[in-house]
Length: 383
Image (cartoon, rainbow, N blue to C red; front, side):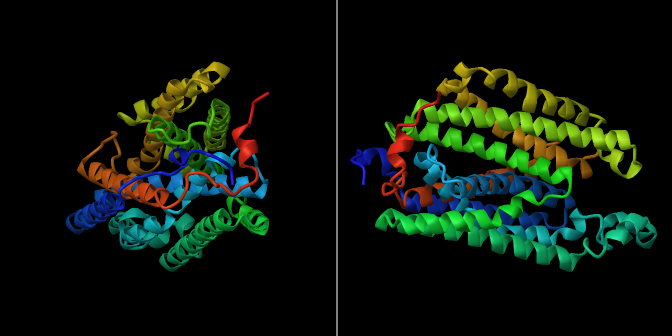
């Protein structure tokens, strides 16, 4: 075990306060669901806020699995923050239930969707052709399978990491490496550009959250002498790289759909080129690519902590705009709108996420003290 100042890696947070934050978040969601269950707008707002935070958790799950699968050294000193993040997946499992109960308001491919009150469901050839996959039972089964898999991955990684922290047994790290290599196909086996687009946005948002969190912890006196400017430089490089990757995928998706000129697909973009949605479309191009690209492209920007902090906040803000852009035009067809349901659901999930993260983080050391690679991570340098 390394000789480090306990004040730098022992996070202190009152657990009762964190549990109160989680409870208030759940209660607010239940009350909003109770009063808004008959309103389709509620379910779209709920889905937007829910997926915003869930995507950050899943982005973290990908990163920590990559860390273990490739036995990364530089990220050992920030690994525990990633592990604490993925342990929020159990808190976000039950809140998926309102989405199941609101399926008939959310998904057009269900025969009881409001759209089919004025249209013939059986006459829609495309939906009829996809019913074997797009049906209520299949959707619920897949959701159960995904959440079971995500919970198993999160719990296995976290508790084995805690076990290694106590014993220092190198066999545990080998077990984690083999475990994390095996399900990597879950992330990479994607048949459509949209899946890659969603992954790119989720991972970019997690990188922003991770970087922002580490900066905040250092401002409070934690991780000093453990996480250095070299780590922030690397995180900045990841932010820059996935900004470019996200733009490439988003552009490719647009070009493929637009130039193929298939009405069933081009209408998705046409809906987002009316009213104030046109402004949001331009904002995504400028705000999610050009601004971070031309700021993070410079080496000095990646090593400027305060500038990096501002960029992480901007990336997280644009991630919400992106998800809203994907989901909400279905219900707000002419203009971008942020209403009371959006505000309450976003604040509620924020309380659950922040309270859960602070609670989990306070239960263990901020760094894996018994990892033999920790010293190499602390001394990491960019060349």
